[in-house]
Image: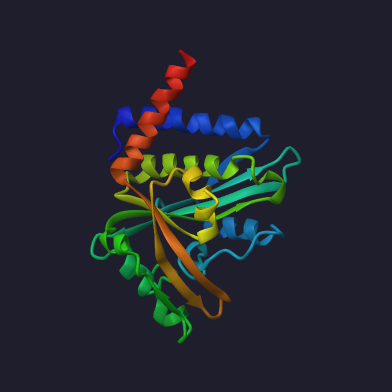
Length: 236
């Protein structure tokens, strides 16, 4: 459970990122209805399809186990999107969850194509168990790329995940170019490993070879407290 002291840190942490988004002309909002989220993503012309992890028709997210973020510009048009969900892996680990396809489908026997497959060879994924917050489906409109919005969205994801769940791990799966160009380090993730998800979902027309990125729960707490204290020092 998140302590009262931790919640105060989180509130200040989130306020800082929300203010930064406002300075860039973006108004952020949070939601928990993933039917609404999918309707927004489908209406956003330049965004790719949302993976089944965040689609209620393939992987329903129970109340309190997921949230999404949307940011609109001064014309009330969608400019940024992102989603986060909690996996209860108390009897499993993230590698097993991916390879069983349960990370993507609530019932793989019903929804997965016979040729669907996922291989996770990242060693650390086998050590990720307990409460694992998965951060994905990030999208930034072309005219806001390079403006720091991915870092802001990641900061919001970290803060809200910590406040809701105090997870044992927070992680994501990203293309290698995001690591090579330093985008992932801007997000604030401390670790990355190759072969996090070599994925094929036939009916979704998805073929990926993504890297695993993550923070431990202790690193997440430290990041929030450390940054909030640094901002207070700058103000003083």
